[in-house]
Length: 233
View 1 (cartoon, rainbow, N blue to C red):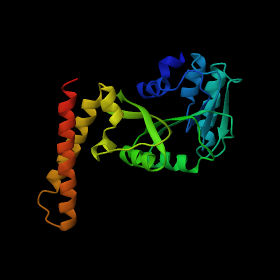
View 2 (tube, rainbow, N blue to C red):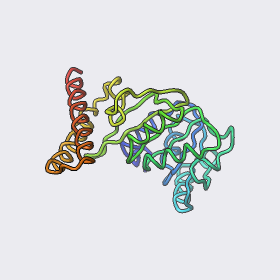
View 3 (cartoon, helix red, strand yellow):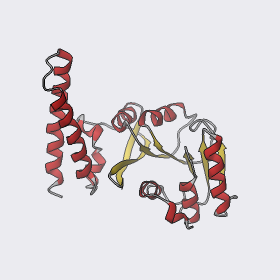
View 4 (cartoon, one colour):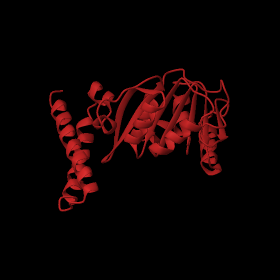
């Protein structure tokens, strides 16, 4: 079976964001599909498949051997990037986990790399807040779709970033700037969630709930404004 045939749309979108010639450390590698695909297609020459658990590393090692890449991809037991040594990689893929865990991995990393490809499964807004306040900038952002789910993929480097409005923690500024074709679907999903939440709070008059209702009403208005912008694309 070709490696292309086992790569999901989410994983393919992540791989497409990795610069040609990069040396990649794939954190939480699981089956090792991303470094295997990148080496097999010649996009990179070498990389590391890293995971906290021996089981996923064993699966990754099996696939590395299966596709004849033993000399190009090394497996390593590691809590995030902690076991990475200086000079072993210039780009990290941290994907398929919660945004708060991704932030924790960045926080505990022993040194900085040239670039990070981040794909949070949850807490995307919180991850953007972390990046903004800890000296990172998002240089590129795109969406990938699998069935009815959307996944955000960010290219992140060291630098400064300013997010001017709360709505852009939910809908990345780069998505809007790039006119990502899946952005309207993302906005529609967020609007549904916020409208349902507001409806659920409609009959409560507690002060704390009132503040929450004001915030949700703002988010709905801001998302509706972005929705109108998308219609002009």
